[in-house]
Length: 266
Image 1 (cartoon, rainbow, N blue to C red):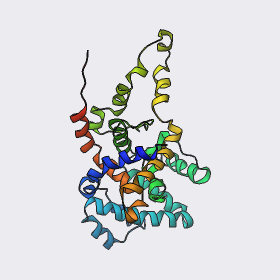
Image 2 (cartoon, rainbow, N blue to C red):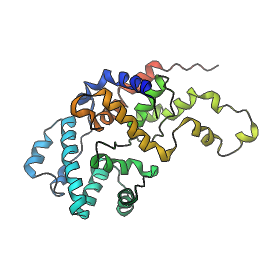
Image 3 (cartoon, rainbow, N blue to C red):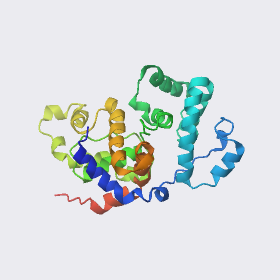
Image 4 (cartoon, helix red, strand yellow):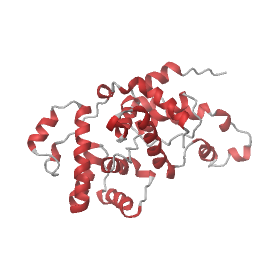
């Protein structure tokens, strides 16, 4: 858990961008299927299409949360169909096996099991289902938060980053930046240990949050940030902070990295 004083550093970093969230956020999902899925009427969808991405997304979150919870109580088929839409159509994750994806969701609903290897899929549904408790564990969100921790010298383990496809984030791999900042931990002091195939993973355990704890730790951290960053109703819904971290990852965070990193090879 990040201590309160360190949370203030994260909040102060994000304050410079929070008032431009509606301008930064540009994720614009295709909503055509939502009439068929019993979420919006045709006339409502026609109005939604004309909304800017941020305003559109807030309306989606409110309505889909309502419908997901309603379907969960009354129609598992409708719940599953809407969950798949969130993951595939909204999120762009085209898993070849819908049944395995739905099993992930059932594992959480029935047993509270959260597996990191498919966290990008599962967390999308949980974030829509319970927006006051969960966020989407997206590579951009973890990327932004890790840079803020790193650049502000916040004493905390870092969040493992799910695989992503963003070219700017791939170019400046955050895991590499983090390891470079902890270079002494990765130096070879023992040749026998160095030959071990687990050499890097053993050191990573001291630097990164364990994957089986990362999602719950991320939700706690975002909740702490949200209470200090926003006012009124925005403090309750974690998606405002999540959307901000997502939106600045390949814009302001990228600029900050390229402006501040100074690498000297001796």
